[in-house]
Image (cartoon, rainbow, N blue to C red; front, side, top):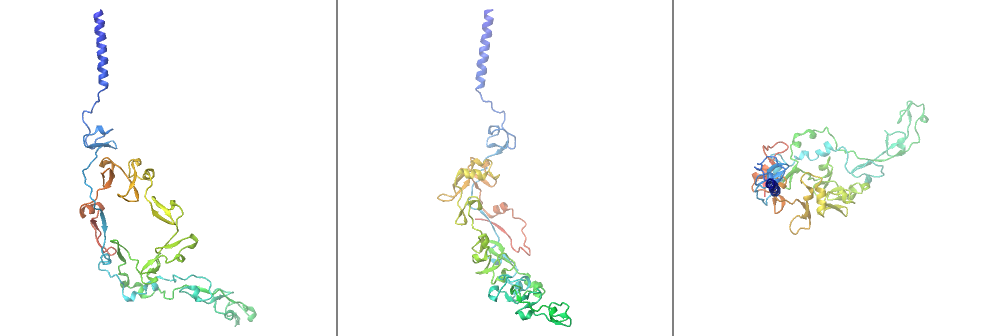
Length: 373
């Protein structure tokens, strides 16, 4: 009997020892997941794959970063934007804007006046007789109403004598007439096709944009920038052209209200003496909080505020990484940070911008190209 109990105790002790040994072992999966298969952790995926959004995915792509970048280019000169279209209209169209599209003079305001000097290009015209808004006058005598054949000469009221008509009525309210004397939309020049078949594009920074060049204010008629200054249409030439009640000032041809607080400026800009100027990020926390407003970073807490380039005084938000899978599309992990992969040739840029089936047309007589440089 004692021998039987000894054997049982020995077996129990051996079992306990065996279980203790097994608890210290790590059980590896029989087979790790291939690309596209589901996973819970990195260890669930085969070598070279990472568990991203619970799917085994490639984490490094072996793509080398190129220092060149992609640009869209339309032109080298103004002629490239126009094709066969002339850049200047025939001489007969010179005054067409004023005749066809400018009913009022741009630098004239309808106000009371005493002389032409108060009306800009307008004219201080005779006023109106006090008893009527339809009879113009230059002096009080023009407003004397007389009875002629039982009808007052100006008011057209019934009368038996002059006492029935207005006798003592002054000529008042001389005003600025701002109507353009040249305006006549029925003029044949307004429908002349020779004046319409003109290119209105110019080449700026290698892109074709609406031409804002001018010779006179009339060339800028109908635009927000309706003043011709130094050969281009601008909104203003000095502060008087802007809204003084809104504290607007004129800067580089445009009216703008000076800022007073940083909140009036874009992110990473500050209000400095009424102007929004770039300052870059200041802290990692600022980058984290700014990144939380977008979907570009999987975890905004990864963002760091670092110099845009070695020796630069401006800092920008960068996303640190350990492998390519942590970066957005068209980026790879390079020296610890996500960067654009760049390009080696023009065809790569064409693919990046998706340029295909480009055709010229009446409004776009040029072909946009993608250049790697």
